[in-house]
Amino acid sequence: METLNVALGARAYPIHVGQGILENSQLLIPSLPAPRAAIVSNSTIAPLYLKRFSDSLRDAGIDVAEIVLPDGEQYKNWQTLNSIFDVLMAQRCERSTTLIGLGGGVIGDMTGFAAACYQRGMPFIQVPTTLLAQVDSSVGGKTAINHPLGKNMIGAFYQPKLVLADTDLLNTLPDRELQAGLAEVIKYGLIRDLPFFLWLETHLERLLERVPEALEYAICRSCMNKAEVVVADEHENGERALLNLGHTFGHAIEAGMGYGEWLHGEAVAAGTLMAAELSCQLGWINADDIERIERLFERAGLPVCGPAMDTERYLELMRHDKKVQDGRMRLVLFKQIGQACVSDLASPSEIARAIEARSTHA
Image 1: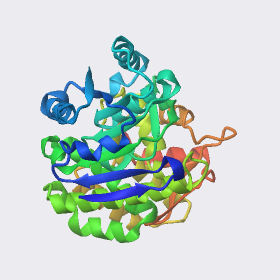
Image 2: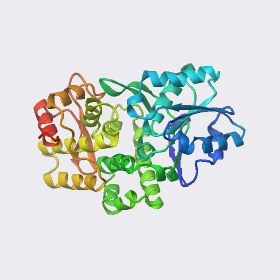
Image 3: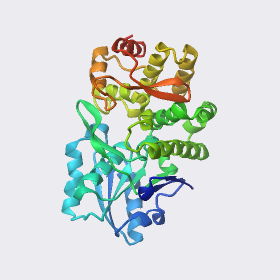
Image 4: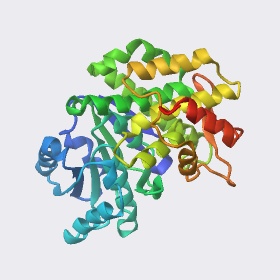
C-alpha cells in the first residue's frame, strides 16, 4: 500500500492506494469522530462490495446505515440527493456521523455534496470503485450535482477526511469504464507531467490488462499531481482550472447528448482533441503533437471525435461553463505536451472550427 497526503493544513487527509485494503477498517477508524457511519452506494456496486465493507466496519464496533441509489449519471440530481437526506433524517444521523461514498464519481460527488449540506457539514470519506474516481474525482473536494443546462453546476468545495483506493475493486470494472478512467490519467501527463505521459506511451497496454503494479503506479502518480494542484489552488482561482482539460467541450457533449449516453471520460477524450485542434490553430502545438495525443487516446479505446451535434449547440452549452468570465470563454489549451494553460484568446469562430474538426459531422 502507498499513502499520499493532501497537505491542506488542519484539513489535510491521506490517500491510501493498494490491493485488498477495502476491508481494512483500521485505515478508516482514525478519521471517524464517532462510531457511526452511513455508506452511500449504488445498485451496481452494492451487490459486489457493500456487505463486505459494512461488515468490516461493524466488526470494528461501528454502527452502519446503508443507502443504495440508482446507478447512472442521469441520477446525479436534486431528487436523488434528497433520498440521501431522507435516510439520514430517518436514521437520526447526527453531525458527527461520517458519510462514506462507495462507488464511482457520481456517488462520490453526491456523497460529498450531501455531507457538505447535512446539518451544515458532516465528515465524509471517499472509497472510489472506478479508475476515474480513484485518480480524479475522489481527491480535491469538488462535490456537485448536475443541472439540465450544465454538468456539476450546483455543488460545494468540501474536502473528505480520507480517500481509500483499493485497486482490487477495478477487477469488476467493465472495460468501457476502465477506458473512460484512462482519459483522466492521460490528462495529468498532458497538462503538467511530461515524464508520466512518456511512461503512459510505453505502459498503456499494461493498464488495459489491469496489471496491479501498473495500476497502482498510475493511480499514485495521478493522485500526486492532483494533490499538488489542489494544495496550490483549492478553490480553482488559478492553476486548478488546468485539471479541466477537455472538460468544457466534454461537459457540452454530456449535457447535449443526455447524461449517461457518453461516459465522462469518453467526453473528456473527445474534448481534449478539440482543445488540441484549437491549440494548433493558435500556433502553440503542431499537427504531429495532435497525432501523438490522438494515438494514445485511440490505444486506450477512447473516442477522438465528438458526436454529431450542431456546432451552435456545442457553443451554447459551453457558455454555461464555470470558467466563463465576463462572457468570454476560458479554455484549457496546450502550450506543448506536458504544459497546459488557461486562455481566453480564441474567438468563437476559432472554437467552432476546432469543434467541427473533431465532430463526426465534420
